[in-house]
Length: 96
Image (cartoon, rainbow, N blue to C red; front, side, top):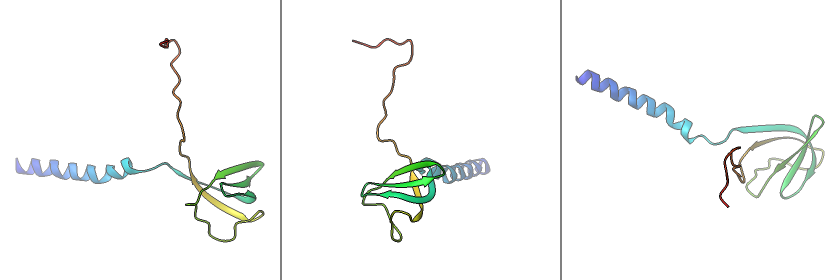
């Protein structure tokens, strides 16, 4: 009986230690590299292929080096929702 209880505790401890980081993980990080097209206090625009990417920034954004138009940069960013609007399902009736 003691061996079975010990085995259960070992399994629970292992499961807890390996699954907790998954629950605590934040949104994925991404990066974009290219020449800077425009810089402002709230945004950095970068050319990626034929597309213009505008990445928001604030006072907490860490800048290493002299950021200016024409510089080649690599920007690391995360996608974070600023608002969510839930639409009613088709066929459901809204209360008036």
